Image (cartoon, rainbow over all chains, first blue to last red):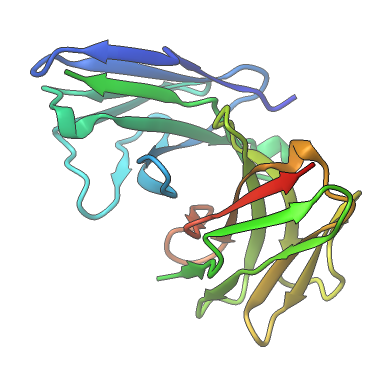
Length: 117
Length: 117
């Protein structure tokens, strides 16, 4: 149980285009999902907290207009990187809380590797 | 704001031996959890062990155990009978469940563990 999927697992795009990454909780309802960014050989940095049906809360330094987050249902959150540039190339990871399991643990997706040419 | 410090960027251990990974944290919160996550080369984040701060007893999960020293704000991970599959990055993480930023994870920079055959 508590499985989180991400799609796609790997994407390459041209500079200036937009890319959408999906995060799904497969066997539970996730009122809260989180988006992280991880550069090579570095730790996970929280980008934003996404609550179902409301606007995401972004961490300081994260551009809201560049990283659009939508959490329209209890099982799906999406991250759209708009007008992507090479510096946006990174590994993006989502996680979700399961309140039925107490909500004190985050379950992680397998991550999405974004390469912007 | 919380901070998590892992002072050992890399460690190695012989197969079947025991290794301890260090973690210290700083917080003014009273209600929190501490976690150790493993990130193998696949980059999937895997929960290794969790400790509730209000519990004095150290958590154990099979070959994994922690030494939680609340007053010293220390949370080390001991891996016994190390196996080749334990080779991974290990992240210490903090989560408070009251106050600002509830249920968000703050990660340390990680320790790269190599198990040598």
